[in-house]
Every structure is written in structure tokens, then in C-alpha cells.
Length: 317
Image (spheres, rainbow, N blue to C red):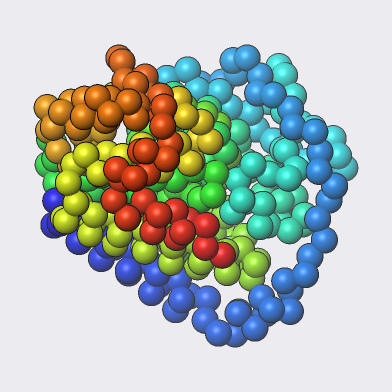
């Protein structure tokens, strides 16, 4: 397991260094002068349409089941929608990184945005696959897995509305080094990697936000590697459940034994034993993949200190 984490950590270190080299101190000075930007008034969030388009991810290599998508166009406050039902780009945006764009930046990328809906288990990227599109999760949750072989993996990142999936493409690095899979169904904003790369080059504020995010992601990956090496499975499972709860802001969610086993890098029988131990302590209820946290304080006491460390990393500005 440490081998998998080390490989992913190395790739993220390279990504972070490439980011700093790309943007440099001159652009940071520009960022300081451009930090104060005006934001439009918040608009009413509009619900997703019932069922719109089936989309294809990763350059048409793999269809996504029953996905919903709607192309967004903003011209003089008019909508040009390629589906039967209109969909507005919500302001403020549900993804905090995408919200760091200025109003002008949103207008520039709006014609190339799609809101997509992912089902549980949908795959965004596999290791070695070209990253054609970047995803800003809104209500979905994306798990990043380092893969050793077909049966052995380890979760090295969990991305929700605070982050972005496929961030290496903004640096001109086209290949994915992780297996990105949907852990909780929901919506995301999809943007072409080429379009976002062009926007990054124009926006010092977005550059700074991405550098901060890469730094936090690297710190989180390192902590997960440490946790996987030194902590017991029961404590690691508690950490995973608490982190999922924080991302989804819900005490009830769906996670199968297989998903948890892949995330923690263990066998399914180990997950069963650890989950049963938590159930005997009346900390969770778990049946057919449906998990409910019954005692938040008790579960935090069982979890290792890595939960709070990772939480602090995610909340860091």
C-alpha cells in the first residue's frame, strides 16, 4: 500500500512544482493587484432537468449511464440551450474553485460548460488515459484511487464541491495518473481542458486558487499514506466515513463493501469485520451498502487523528 501512495505522491509533487514554475512570481504580483473583483448578485438555483442527454467522457471512450447534461450559453442574459429544458449557470456557483472566476471569466467559459450528472460507480478517468475534460463537482463526490493491480488499490483523494478533478490538464499534462470514480451520485460542471487552460493563463486569481488547491491535495495524499501505514483498519474506516459525511453534509450515504475495500486497500472480509465492530458499538448502522452514522462524537473518538488533520487541510485557505 505505501508503494501505491508514494507513486501518487510523486506525481502530485511534480504537478505542484510544474504549477509554481508555470505561474512564477510575476503572476503572483499580478494576482495581488487583481484580487479585488466584483461579483454579481446571487441568482436563484434552478433544479436539474428530469433527463436530458447521454454524454461520453474521456474523448468518447466510455459512455456514462443515464447522465444528464445541458450546454450553457450566456449572451446578453439570454440562454441558448441544446435541450428541451433550460438550465442556468447558478450564481454563486456550487463549486468553490469555479466560483473563484471573475464574472468576466465565467462569461468566457460559459459557452464551453456542461452540467453533467453522474451515477454511483461512473468512471471519469483511468491511469494512462488522456484527460480531455475537467470536472468541478457540485453535489457529487469523486474518489481518486492509486492502482497497483486489478485487485489492489488505495484511495489517495476524495473530491467534492471544494475541488476539481483532472487538475493536471490545466498545466498541460494530458495523462491521468489515477483512477477517478464517482463515490456519490450528483452533478458537476464539465469544462474542456483546453478552454480552462486558456482561462488559467488569463486569470491570476484562478491561478492562485489552483496552486493552493494542489498544495492541499498533496498534503492530503501524504496524510492518507501515513494513515494507511500506521493505523488500524477500524480507525481508518471511521476516518473514511467521517470524511464522506463532511463532503456530503449528510449522515446517511451509500458505500458498498467493495468500494470501501478499494478505498482502504484491504480485502472485503476486513471491511466486514471493521464495520461490524462499529455497529456493535452503536456508532453506525450498515445494511446493503446503506450507511447511517448514529453517533458522530463516538465515531470521531474511534477514528485516528488523521481525520482531523485531513479536515483541517481541506478547510485551509
